[in-house]
Length: 409
Ligand code: BGC
Image (cartoon, rainbow, N blue to C red; front, side, top):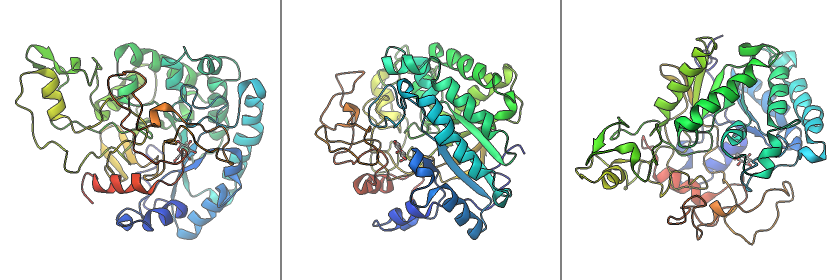
């Protein structure tokens, strides 16, 4: 089918996330929304609720849509530290990814008991975008070669595409990452080429997912036209946008979809946008267009994205965004909450203790509220204090997301 989200009326709610959310003040307002289940290490397949447990629960609930994230490539999170994973290319990671991770997942999903559930697989967050922009990092360079991200994703897509009820959406970063034309074109080539080398070619994917775990708004309501000039300068030249062609996710994903169709993808491909944390409501949300004639002031007073720097990605004070829903715009299959609101992006404390389940997760300076942004030393990371390791429950962060929800809760 074209759009599994539109065809499904009952979307799975992760009971573990839901329990965390509803135990927080005000959290019950969102605790019954669907969020993705992350298979973020081999043990996640079987430990705790486990993949089979989630699917059995979905059956028991009568759900017809289940969304999970495939997130365990060797050399995972190669350009950062917060979500480094358990597999390394240099330690037989590709073989282990296939045999100990993808194969067991596919084995469970292929159980005929689950044949009537539409299963959405979000494929490997941040991985291919890192191959476009971060090859100066040795771990990414290695991931660009044999047994790296391409081989891993090709294998995952090949195996998942043997199951008719599985819909794979490949991660494409976000507009604030791949939006420059110098990144957009190479990303379209790299990701399009990879899909075309899978066993089923374009039939191995349902589309692409953008803004996963990020904070870029769906639209900038007061900055609808990036080519508008203020004081003689195009607004995309403002410091905050650094000449990026895209100020928002909606334009970005629609152009991405068209670029893929132009190179041979079928019209049925659709886009997903993670809207779990890109609402940007609350008291600091602008209510109109700035009257300034200075391009930076104009942008800063008009933008709803309140980050200090658009590259700030760790534990930002955003707000819960649009609720999960199918077909919000042409070409967009759904708004989804891939990153479950309230789960940390990475540990804040540089003197952290190791997570025994995830010993490779480290402190990334972008998660340190007292550090400068890695790409621009003149601004801070904007990260919230006290956050636990990536994926851990972060009550203070959850409260901020509720307070800044837009549309308001
Ligand atoms: C973490 C994962 C976690 C996911 C969802 C990622 O940043 O590395 O362990 O499952 O976020 O919170």
